Image 1 (cartoon, helix red, strand yellow):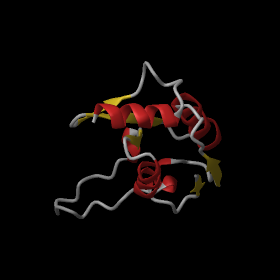
Image 2 (cartoon, rainbow, N blue to C red; image 1 turned 60 degrees about the vertical axis):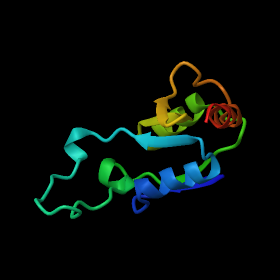
Image 3 (cartoon, rainbow, N blue to C red; image 1 turned 135 degrees about the vertical axis):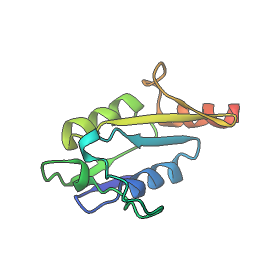
Image 4 (cartoon, rainbow, N blue to C red; image 1 turned 180 degrees about the horizontal axis):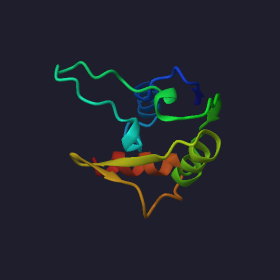
Length: 118
């Protein structure tokens, strides 16, 4: 899977693409507080954030993600190349548990474990 990163790409698109490939895993992003849009008072009026909304520089590029990559390595790529902090979760029954202790497992192994527990 290749994820194209540019200022215009919505964070929700990146997350959806990842979960479409690994349905028992979920990716999320740590948004700096000063980048979170203020609520304007109208429900549903807060627009979705793009990569450009959370970064000060202008990164562009492609991240190639393969089954044998670890969560730890993918998180490092997002941080080193794009300055984006990521969090990853694995499905466990009806819950999404943040992946911390097993972050060196491959994506295939993480996804398989989520499928078995589900």
